[in-house]
Image 1 (cartoon, each protein chain N blue to C red):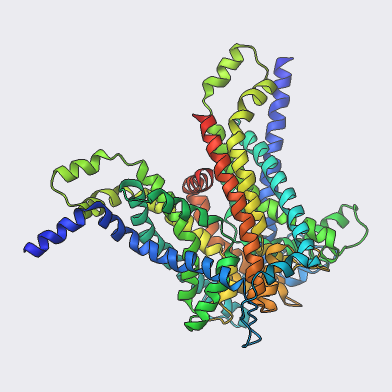
Image 2: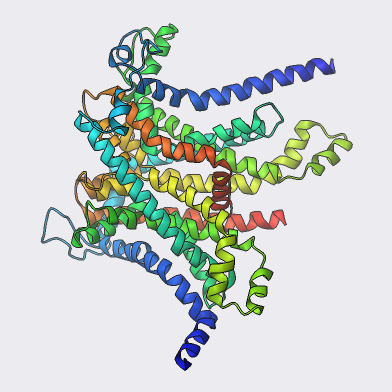
Length: 303
Length: 285
């Protein structure tokens, strides 16, 4: 009885209760986040290859030095940069534009707003096979459409050239991820009080002026967040490349995440792959720190 | 004059909305049409856009009792694996994550904010940096190609998400309710499980649906951790279609539609929850 009482008093102590409730989540976080993060940092200083059981010796910064000297590494970085900049800018621009459109009053607005979620909900792999099928060289709908409209004389092998293959991967990404931008910007637009526009209208301000003086400054924090978040996503892009191009043709779509995957799980260079993955992580962390900072600034503007 | 500009404006507005709808629906509609066409129609040049008769054979084989083709039989297994993996990781993360979120919302301990920021920051970690050690551990434990391995890997991104979403939900529940329950002699545990959790049911549902869709759509870690049918998810099995030569386009499209139905239906039905999840997860996170 007495023991029971002291037990329940222990539960009343906040620190202990907090620890108890946090325990299951902490075990998972330590197991699948903290430990792997430390472990792959360790691996990145070794020459571990799964094909060679004697490998795994400490080689310091050797992998990092090798990576930075590798032309393919810089080429994949360049392609990642092109992919990231183009998808992020286009998706943010389209997101703002379409969100402003869906913020107008029209019949069926609720339905269209719901429909926007469709591409987001589609599994990445299904998105990939869908676009690959549409741009199929022999039977694809895009070839069929362009030839039937007499825009093109004969079918083209879209995925056969690095430039068009890259464009296709970018298009597939834009179709899938613009909805996130639309939804976020739309939410921000809805939180702008109507009175601001009414007051501006009384002052005789024109629509365009309202947009640049009221809407755009208030959208600035969310647009900034979008740009940073989407850049991080673009750095991590793997699924589409794996499904549509496998990095080809002639490495034309081989971006950073796919390059890491190849080195680690195809060439089984686990040490080198870890170093590459860490370089990507550093890039992502730098972006997210910048993100947190810019977000803090954004919140100050709001309040 | 004013009426005319206004009318022009309406025409422009509706055409723009129609263009957006078309851009969203057309690619997916083509996948659906392909999935119920016959191969002859799809591979004819010039292409016949609409099938003369419906071909539901692949749907019957994937969803129905018996499948004559090996591919459709493996899709059925993949569908089952995806369902088990996505629901178990969602349920576990809802349980562990909501308790943790309660702590971050209501209790105080030293370093709380640091721990919380760290958890949020991990959301930006590229999966590839985590998957290399996870792969090594799973292979040492003999867990490669098993469902638990995939559930555990999924937790690495679903748990932080649930913690974040549930914390903002707890923040919206008034604190007086707990204080009143405490005054009435309810224990701390009692307050959490009898007062707070029932009140948080809508938040749990919203986070659960959001997490389930993300877990269902996950591809990368499933690809790395499963090389046998025992744990391959539907996404992994469909990805194998795309690298095969002479692939059956109709079967591939049907598989794609079937794999997309659970997340698409959930998202369209519970669109309010998805909007909440996306805005809370991305705007503030």
